[in-house]
Image 1 (cartoon, helix red, strand yellow):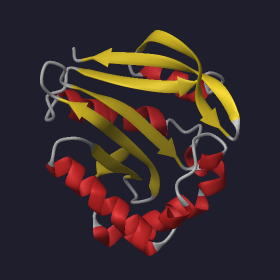
Image 2 (cartoon, one colour):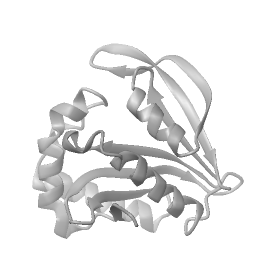
Image 3 (cartoon, one colour):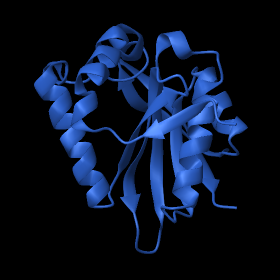
Image 4 (cartoon, rainbow, N blue to C red):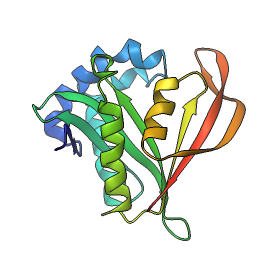
Length: 173
């Protein structure tokens, strides 16, 4: 039985998504680059939802909200940069609410999105990156069958400092 479900964002969840992003803003910005200030408004989130819907319709990206079976919004998981011809691949990204960390939700959300990627979306490969020092993200990826294939030096800027990144891949079974 799944603990979580993935739902494509729609305009009717804009207020809830704005609360989620605002409530977790400081937590996220300590780990990943900041969103533009205009994002943190009803209009900004609405525009992001419209972009997510357009990318899904164009088969260039897929964004999902992560909900518990009780309905609580606990995260987001995305497949971006979909490349079809000759590659059938995408890049994985995710963010979980601070209150959801350590509960297995990120691992479950990644498992669910990989099932979509390798199932209905017909992808053959998914890549992911994790900042060196982000042990939680590395564990999530390894638990989901990713293998590390690279390490890039000073390739990610966060908070004015440059960080190394680890590169991972997972192939369809």
